Image (cartoon, rainbow, N blue to C red; front, top):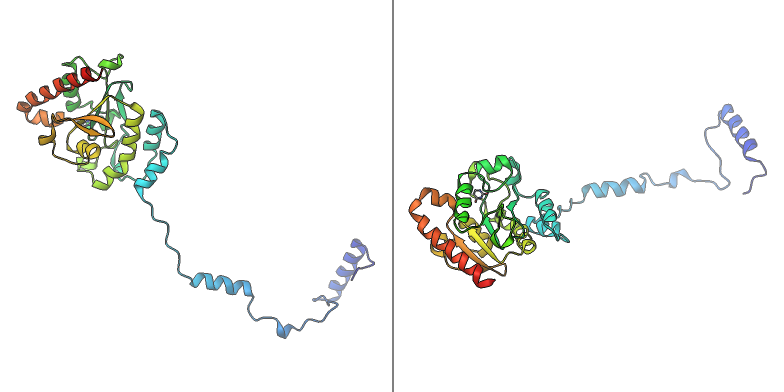
Amino acid sequence: MESALDYYSARALLDWQIELGATEAILDAPVNRYETPAEKPKIKAIARQADAPVPPAPEVVPVDEARASLQGVADLEGVRAALAAFEHCELKRGARKFVFADGNPAARVMIIGEAPSREDDREGKPFVGRAGQLLDRMFAAIDMGRDVALSKDAIYVTNVLPWRPPQNRDPQPEEIAMLRPFLERHIEIVAPDVIVVMGNLSCEAVLGRRGISRMRGNWQEGFGKPVLPMLHPEALLKQPFAKRDAWADLLSLKAKLESLS
Ligand code: URA
């Protein structure tokens, strides 16, 4: 019903009634309080929700997360940033530094090692320890190096794992698998003419199998590129007699580069 009173008069009348002791507004139509529900329906609904089973949280699949984080990534800085921000690999928690790559990204040869050494982990750069120094000497022997500006004589160096495993433990197969999408995109962007995989871990990540002693020196194909498996410089430090095989592999690499140019 429309009231003839304006707002201020109606408000003054209401205040006066409250002063007189009125505690309830009488409506035009009567309300039977006995018929109102004992429980408010809203509260009931909440109680039912609390009893309902909690739906399980969606499962996180690290390798899918890795692929999703690389969506639209088309340059090296993007791969570096996506990998550095990846939170699903336990190895990240134990490492001191993130170790991405070194050398000339325009190089014809991309070398894929295993994981940072203690020194690499301290410096945030791959292959700077004893094994790395041997690697530099090996490539210098065929007139190649990571500080070389000319792409035909340059090398570019990275690892399967950007974080040093605690106590240098072997990485789990799942850890290699979840990091593989980053390696794949890294290779796509650098687009080398050939890849050198050093050690069993790199063989597994790039070629899908281990057996470096048998595979070394035999050209394979991985990620659509010619791949040369070689003994890891760390192994050569322990077995100097195997340097003869490494030399034969370096000559084979040189010959391959000539045949492709
Ligand atoms: N340092 C690296 O960066 N990778 C290796 O595989 C070994 C030492």
